[in-house]
Image (cartoon, rainbow over all chains, first blue to last red; front, side, top):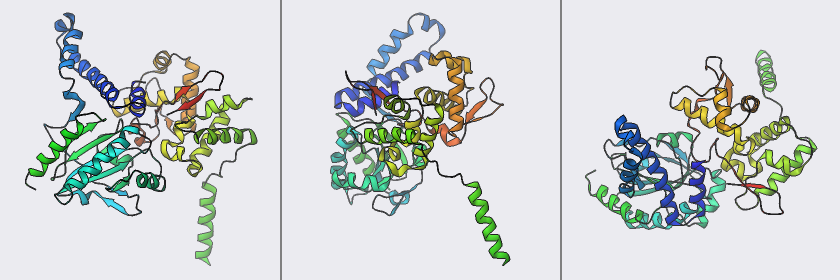
Length: 212
Length: 187
């Protein structure tokens, strides 16, 4: 039920509430993690307070889930594009790639599209690509008119079970991945929040500056 | 001649294996029409169970099964089916929760809870849990497996182990009722 509240809220609300809900979910996870690793005597002394304080302090940090320590390779895929062609993950090779998992009925996902368009245009030709992976939105023929209406400037494909699994599972919308030139998942951004654009752009610039 | 006979035999064999398309009775069709009309409204995803209640009259789990299979076999009927899948509209909340719990246990390689534990957790009677498993089996989502201790069931396909993600097999429609109106479900 918690997940449904999360998803429902993402769809219904504007920015701040989404961030808040995302934080609560992640803080609970972090709190339970802290509780599970704390020694028994610490728990008896009130690990709840300890965990709550820790997660409150870490609140802004956990908005973005980072796979920073050991980068994982992005999965290979070959998906149906909404323009009727196929899109292979090979097209991402050597580029910094922003892969956005979105749904046509997801309000925050739609709100992000102008941001992705902007980044796509700004860094086009500099080794940066954007790919929209559409999930839970029907067939390519269903998605095509929506993408046109939303003026999506970058390639859009239809996701499937395998690509979702390959990226570690998609548990909410929007979920965005940044992939290095070497084809490794650098970061996973869950949800939409105010600092996201600046954070993402800084990450993109950092990855573009790295040697291919 | 031999080739022709072989081809005909193979074709007849394939035809015998393919189940005939499900045809709905008039009263089942009423439910389907109700749902299709509902789904044309913004954010609506009223499922079979609630649609049967709203249409009124006597409906059984067999009716829900028949409509569910019809929806599964006819995704062209409505974008809602192509977007959220026939399972979301055809399973009851209890069935979805059971599928979620078992799916998660399998994915995490943990023993699933017993039927008694499921009944207690979901606050339903053991008979409801048994019925839910039976329906999940009929829909081909779970299959009997005596090797699974205290439960006797597992997910029918491995892919269902990863189906707990956003808006998948376990998605619970949100039930809404406006004063004076019939309840409906939204995503």
